[in-house]
Length: 206
Image (cartoon, rainbow, N blue to C red; front, top):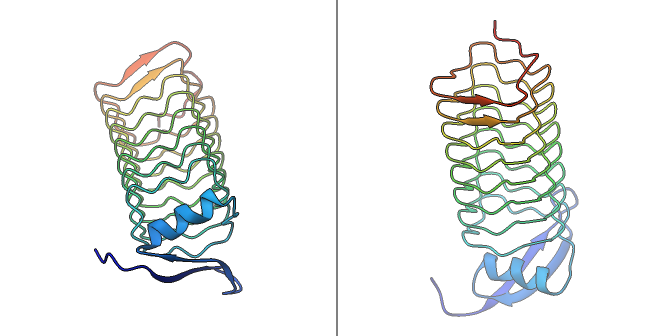
């Protein structure tokens, strides 16, 4: 990693206008500088960004693009990520508790071991995402897509999966205690060793 600061800019993904610039050693430091200054990074283009360990807690990243970005171990707790483009992003071990991820695109993202407690993922697309060992307690996944997603050993205690599309999802050894799943489609889902307790009802198992 270079120890020399250089001018870095973050651009709007739609207009390409610079929305924040700073002297920084890395893109991660530039983003954190923007967060500390209170700058909103909505619609920011952070494609392929090396942002492992980023601290952007409570920041506004709505509609930002993180396609294939490295966000392993990042702190995005309580961040606004509404309609964010995060497909194929690396989010292993990331902290996303209480994050607003409504309608976000997380197709094929790696969210293994991520903390998504109380996160809002209404109508988010998590098709083929890796959520193994993720903590999804009290998360809201109403009408979310989780087709062929892997949720092995995931904790979904108290989560809302009303009307979720989960065809072919792997829920091996997942915890579904008091999980609300009315209208969820689990056609072809793998449920080996799944802990089913409390109110789990009105599912489509065919």
